[in-house]
Amino acid sequence: MKKYRDIVGDGGSHILDQVGQQMDRLKARMDKIRHKVAIMSGKGGVGKSSITANLAILLSLQGHSVGVLDADINGPSLAKMMGARGQKLKTTEEGVQPALGFLNIPVMSMDLFLPTDETPVIWDAPTQQDSFTWRGSMEVTALREFLSDTDWGNLDFLLLDLPPGTDRLPNIVKLLPDLGGTLIVTIPSEVSQLVVKKSISVAKNILKTPVIGLVENMAGYVCSHCGTLGELFPSGNVKEWVQSLGIPFLGKIPFDSRISASADSGTPFLLEYPDSLTGQAFREIGKKVKEFFKVS
Ligand SMILES: Nc1ncnc2c1ncn2[C@@H]1O[C@H](COP(=O)(O)OP(=O)(O)O)[C@@H](O)[C@H]1O
Ligand SMILES: [Mg+2]
Image (cartoon, rainbow, N blue to C red):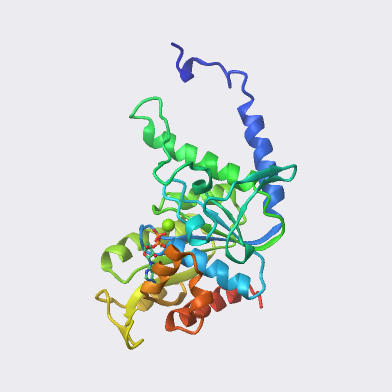
């Protein structure tokens, strides 16, 4: 059997031309979107997807056109959080029409392509040794397709919900050289902060992408009886260390069980509890994001 190393050139596939054309399509689509924002954290489970969904809803309620791209190919959760699961995607001459979530926010996610809840995304590698590199390159391919083939139309903001892992941002920056900013999420625990500091280094020092700032999620909990704030994780001074790294601190979001309940029940948290402490925290953060982009 021939191995790919034995194949001369591209084996007649014109793969470079194809990728080149796809990148041209991607650029044409992205030129219609004013601000591209990546929501990231080295760490999983810290609330990237929840923050992406609520920020999208907030910006949309404030009259901005927003789209969300679930860049977490292996653990997609944004379609569920945006109330867009189960929709059939249609393709028109303009491209793939994204699903429509709450407030008709366009959503694209790997989840919309999976036939059942239990179906995992499996990347088939020629050998087990190759699987790591293979997975990385398949993820980039999938993202490139989402960005180049989805008909987002004109948008003020496209929010990209990144998977955990510091290695993901370089892929996004390669596809979106005009990424407008990254919003980094941590929880107060020292374990999380250790990982998140690495993401900050990658974004700020290595890739030199604009960093909007850091959000501290699950900072204290809102008591469901009296509505006051209690401590959840032993809190180091996140605001202080992040500012010492030259990164703006955007604010704290408390642990509020209504966030998960809303995501599960399909009612947007910010529509149901706009005036809660948590709702106010989201608005403060949204305000700083808009200030960063000089959007009123
Ligand atoms: N501030 C919060 N209060 C309560 N639950 C939260 C909060 N932020 C996130 N969650 C919950 O924590 C879990 C992980 O959040 P998620 O947004 O999926 O994290 P990530 O995308 O970083 O993996 C979800 O069940 C979500 O509903
Ligand atoms: Mg997520």
